Length: 374
View (tube, helix red, strand yellow):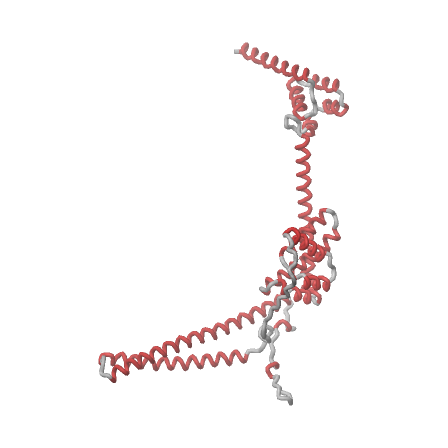
């Protein structure tokens, strides 16, 4: 096709853009089908390029061998003219035969290379070959030297930026904010947002947790897209927003499903943290309650007989002594010592001395009984 101005547009007649095809399969997700076709086309292009490089390398080796053979032939011909090395007549014939073969190989390689170039020209354009970067330029806008921030200041500023991004609801606002702060498109932002979600869930701020979780999934999808395209995440977040704003239902369903899974993980993690905090608090309280003998008064109180518990509830010393006297001496002594070790009961010095004397007397009686039995 050409116009009256003499511009030829025939190169645009056959452009192959697989991502815009309408042919889909009900058994394969549309996005996955396009990715498979794109990958197959890239593999075919790589294979074609590799064959071209192999032909060029083999042709270069053939030309180098041909030049060496020609130089050797000239040397032998000059030696023959001067009447030297008559024994090299046989080698001369071999060199001539080899030279003839190399010339044929050269013509074959030239023909194969030309066919390969024609095959490349016949290939239709696609999204990967339709245009190439003409030039690349980087301009550094270096401003006046400013006061250097310390590491804690930078970390605090970065956290404030991440928290502000986590509160955004509209796609356009999020895209504009990341355009102004591209350094936030990284794994650290996703981790910080998830940690914030867990804190909100622990504080029972469920609506706030769901909002920040939505932004965390946005960052995660951008990072996944960057890994798929093998590019820097800062260079493809605009592509994600363009896709999500016009996405079909399957892609939106995937996004919503991942968001719900993240919320479930956040709730589970928050519950585990609360349980761990409660266990730590209980252990701290228990350590603070321990008596002089290292026993927990709460545990000791629960193990006492009903009458002794009642005496401690009413703070009645006479009732406590009566309850102990009703018990077996060994059992009463056991419970009394546990009460002392846990701090439930603080006996007077006289009572302590009496108990020690009673223990000594009981030990002596036991020894006498054992001697009598012997």
